[in-house]
Each structure stands twice: as structure tokens, then as C-alpha cells.
Length: 488
View 1 (cartoon, helix red, strand yellow):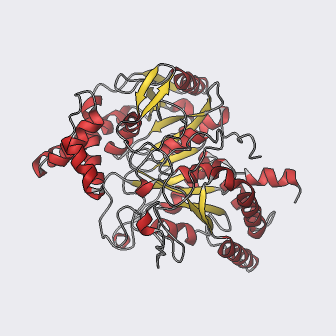
View 2 (spheres, rainbow, N blue to C red; view 1 turned 60 degrees about the horizontal axis):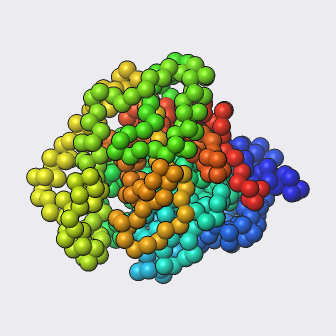
View 3 (cartoon, rainbow, N blue to C red; view 1 turned 30 degrees about the vertical axis):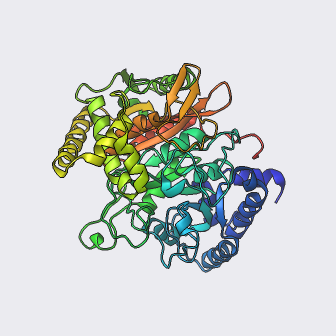
């Protein structure tokens, strides 16, 4: 293949290459070979893929081509090369979750989400980098080199699905599987100029995801979800159709299918939006691009009104999210860290640290009260979506930032044109979709003056994941994915 054709193929959507494979315009072996060649050449710049499964990928690609020649199509991802976050167990392939105690861990089974992608025909290229136990907004750990952002190697691609986002933005795979409990799909999509989707809670089973550590049997991991990142909004719907649905035990009683977007034309959509909030002000350079996104939706014919729904207590919602989050995260933290949090004296405005301290002390009745508030929040959003179709907001308050691995996570600060900001502010705009359980899609809406991507977050109705994806498709017509310089 010519270099020009190689570049074009490398950055096609998963939907397009899946169709090209099915119609025999290109073979899975050709695409997989192209991806492996690009990984060898480009991955050292960004350290996105930490375990490359070249031999098994080529074998799987050859099997996909042979099956197609015999008239068999495995599924929507037949022969499509993809990557998997190193938090998902993969049969026979090292899975570390960035943790030294798992550096030699090789599962004997696939996580449910991985098994579904394989069953749909995926060719797995390898595993992508994460922070220690998926616990940061950056992707670094003691086992592998730090992941870099293809748009600026001195900056992070985000976390915890940072390696997957960097790989996808660099043309090293067509879809990547991620997970999200604090923005871990959405923030990397925003930082890397990608489309990302955080599904409705419990639509995609999380069995086989680390954390929790291997061997721990749990039900639906509270708050957390698994979902895709890609270079096209349509690929999110394709991947979610593969990933979604009850696990094996529950499928005896019920089924799931991705409902279509609630309306067929963007001109029929009625939405509200916000570009800022005092609890987490958005920098001017990000806000400028978000406003362009709102303008693009207006020009497309959508009806937009500014402001939060009156029924949503923003501060109360955020506090509830933080308490529930820390109740999940802290039990697996080192004892010394928990004791340090318990001994801290945070100021009243330091909501994240204050909620973490509260989570080390609260009793079950206090947790139950927060849990009940979670369902009140969900009900309030249900009422909003009876009248409106989506809600537009920032994904994060800043674009991708320089690497910062200082040990005091709570004490980190970010320099912005408007002044210093708390690192923990990253949780604010991520919290809305998590505490409510609602689906949220991120779509690129351009770049800052320093050529850093900005993504807009689209909150959708409960179980209507195709609706925010549809809005993202409208934005894609105006903006869309751009290829980072040096990764052509």
C-alpha cells in the first residue's frame, strides 16, 4: 500500500474499515499489519500501548480473513484492530492495572466487555497504559513509561484511559475500550481530541475490570462504567451496541438493545447548556471553544437555552458524588494515606478533601442518606428530560496540562491564565453523569490557541445513549477529529 493510502486507512473510522473488510476492499491482515507498523514507529513517542500482542493479532486477523472468505462474519467489529485498557482482564495476556503487585498477572479469562468485543470480531492489538489502579487524571505508574499526549508530548493524555486515548488519537487502533468513574473516558477524549462515551450506569457489565483486585466478586461496581473512545461519533454507537446488555446470568430474564436517538433531526432537539459554574470556573480558552460548539448547534437548528435546571442542587449533587466516590475508592487505599486524610483539616471550600475525610468517618446511615440523595438527583434529571433532549456542559475546566507526578494528589495545583487551580477540580464536571447514572458523550469542538483539543460534554436521558451520540454527530459535521502533527 502507498504511504498516502496507509495514512488514510490509519485514520478511517471503525465503521468505515469494518465495511471495507466485509466488502473485501481491504483485508484484516493488511489493516493489522499497518497498525503494528505504526505502533512500532510511533508508540515510543507516546508510550500508549504497554503490551503489544503482535503475534496473536496477526493470527486473529488471518482467521478473520479466512472466515470471511468462507462466508462467515463474526460481528460488527469483524477484523477491526482495537486496543484494550490495561484494567480489563484479557485471557493469556498480562493485565496490570498499573500496579506493581500485578506486574506478572496473566488472567485465564476475558473481562465481559473484552469477550464481547472479541465475539464481535475485534482483533486486539494490545493493552493501553493507565495510572496505578486507575486512580488518577494522568496515565503513569512504576511499571511502564509515562503516556504522553500526541498533541504535546510534554502534556498528559489524561487518565485513567489515557493510554487508550493517546493510541487512538495517534492512529494506533480504531476503537479503544475504557472505563469511567471520575471522567476517565471523557477527560482523555477532551484532552486528545476524540469522541468518548460514558454509558448509562450498568448497561455494560464491569466483571473482569480491575479495580477491584482479581478474584473479588462484586455486583455492578457502584458508579463506574465501561465504554468506548473513537475518532468518530458513529463508532461510539457501533461499539456500544457490541458492549451493552446484561451479563450471562441476567440475560436469562431480560435483554437489552440500544434505543435509537429520541428524534431524527437536530432541528427537533431542545437543550439547555452551561459553560461555567462558580464551583469550578472554566478557563477562558476552553470556554471560547465551548461557545463555538453551542453556536454550531444553534446554526444546525437546535433550540438552546442557557442555565442549569432549577430542580438541580449543583453543590448538593457534587457533595453526594464525592462522598459516594470516596466510599468506593478509599477502602483499597494504603492505610497511611487513609490516616493522612483522616488527620487533615481541610477548609470548608476544599470539598474534595473534606468529603474524603468525611468518608473515612461516616457511618452506614450517613452513607444511606447520600445514596438516597443519589436517587433524588436521578429523579430530578428524569423530570428535566421530559421536556428537554440533552444537556450541554464542559468536559473539564482546562485543556491537557503538563505532566505532574508529585506525590500529594490533593495538594497538586495547575497554573492557568486566570490563576492557580486545584488538581481535584477535575472531578466537578465529571460528576454530573456519574452520580445520576446518565449517559454522556464528549465531542471535539476545536482547539485552544496553543493547539490543544477541547471537548464538549453532552448529557443524555437515562438509557437513551444514542441521543447524546446523535448530538455529537451533529458537532462532528462542524469540527470532527483532527490528526496530530507528527502522527500522520
